[in-house]
Image 1 (cartoon, rainbow, N blue to C red):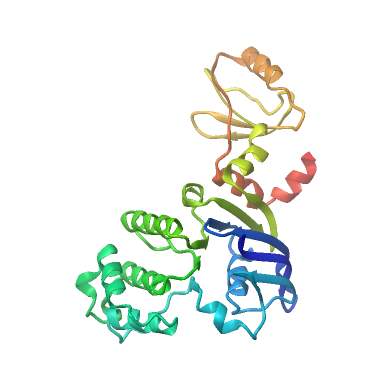
Image 2 (image 1 turned 90 degrees about the vertical axis):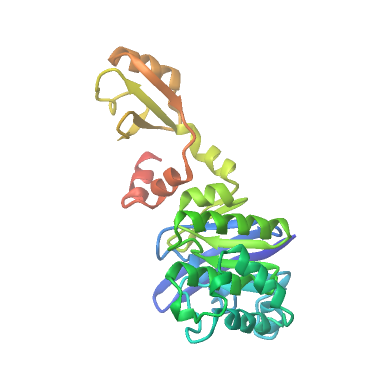
Length: 308
């Protein structure tokens, strides 16, 4: 069962293709992470799931119902969205604004729920203060509560950790995991690869509007993990002329060697031993950050074609 199904969706703005033939499935009860550079199409995709935008072509099903304007209201009562551009009614008090957002979703007995959330996110002392008196971090936590207060089945979060300090980032991470344990499906975009690695059951990377990665962290790492070796020699040495090595990256204490598909690591090790004493030799699993940079850095496409 999928909470979201996207089938061959394209969205353009004049001459710009924001989302290009995108297909994916978000399993129910999972945490699904969108990663990708700025302008890659992540926010546009979230807005299409929310019916803020409609695709030029393709189909989007949310909670088993297809995208159309007729069922707009019934679906949105079961879905919540935290946009990247935060916005609360600044003249309202915190408790009032949370009650207002709950009632928008038809959740009218929200008093105890509001108190519990304010206590959970350390905001009880601010319940009767106007939103405009809050710090940026506190306002962001209030908006998160407003997003989840009505117990939605599907929660869409656009850069939810942006602007939060490490303590509140940890608190929000714990809350997201708790919401998943209670049965909600969470889709969020992030630039923080460590957060995506820790939280997400599934990860999708969108680059220039197209899906370039989709799967579990393990499956993604396995696809990229057999061609990277990290080595440390006792003396500095030139390594980019070794057999099978197509790229060398200096990491400070060691060097990372990118290998051609058919490179033999045993032959590589024998050659390294001729250059000096080998203190470290590791066939490494790349982090999500490594994979992201490999795909999205300037010149990456031309480099990949040159090594194909």
